[in-house]
Image (cartoon, rainbow, N blue to C red; front, top):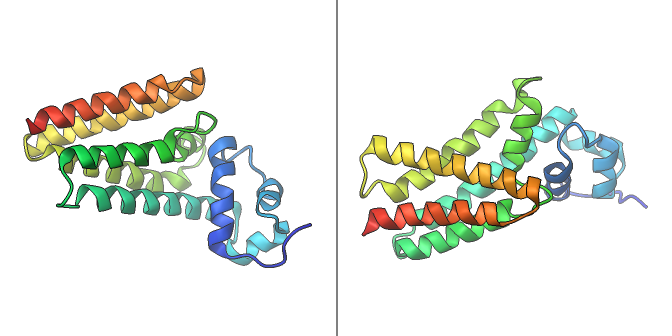
Length: 189
């Protein structure tokens, strides 16, 4: 039986896993409402359209990731090894589920050629991810080199996530994280 009351945050927290696993086009508003245990019409109390809901989901995921990534990276009391361990944990939490992978990359692949409505939120996510890794590299590389390496790391991680999902094997994401850690630690020695 559907709930009669729920918060916007509750709705987003229940919608995110469904969208991560099923994608935008395969997730109907009826299915999303069912996952939230609310009536479909209740979505329209918070969101004018499915597109607005998806944009809010992407903004929420980006905000969570950015906050947690920079909270670790900018913490001056952590050693580089401690920062990497915590970043590794965040990557695991965000991307390790073999049934879903990265909601940003999934949404980009699914929708970019149809309608770039979500493109800005997706770009912000990847720009923040790159910027965070760049901070870890900058003490030992020029700004240009650290940017190139951070971009390469994010590309490698996203490729690892994709292969993990295709082969249902975590070794791909584990290998990408290991390569990232080696590059950052090598830069610190």
